[in-house]
Image 1 (cartoon, helix red, strand yellow):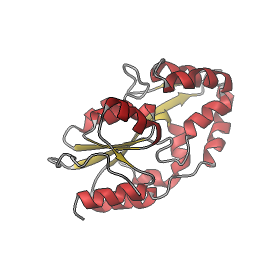
Image 2 (cartoon, helix red, strand yellow):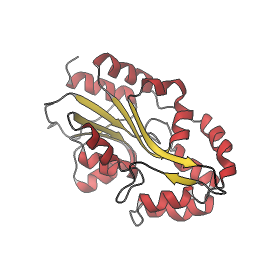
Image 3 (cartoon, helix red, strand yellow):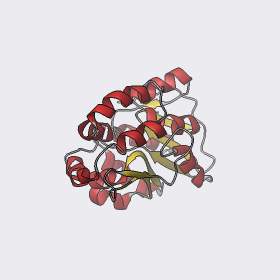
Image 4 (cartoon, helix red, strand yellow):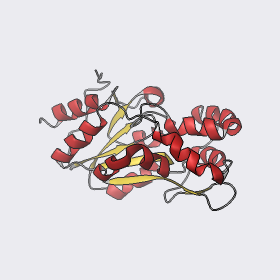
Length: 223
């Protein structure tokens, strides 16, 4: 069950749109972090704690870790991704949004090929996808991101700004979602993200699975 941290949610003045993280949010575990620990263990052990403590930017830390991985690992990373499971209720949540004609935008600070591998055919139900692209043409990965800016390799707020005529709803779980959550009027947060938002005194709705989010929005939209 979800618990509402605030009852003072803004009333929608525009059509809603969902912005959702991938790793640890759509997936039942931190897929991207697990991959970094598997394929760049030394760099990951050094950098990930600095990211969580906000002593290093995501832009610098994630790029450093990814670009330390040999390109020959590309097929192994795809196979590694195939074993990852999706959080309960996600398929039903997408179907619910589709019936309500609410767009679902996936915004990941992780790697696109991992996202697409895990989602498979579900990718067709997603209205937009933004993530990091890997170039394996050199000895080590080169990182490309259309929305690299400021402290983030994928600046999620910049993505949100592309959809200005909408009531923004953010869903996330960790440090990569913090700026997105701070910019969104309505936030569903769990795990590390909830703790960060507590520090910022930013209201949010706690959740466990996508059934919680679906049920809450169904109530909010009086469906």
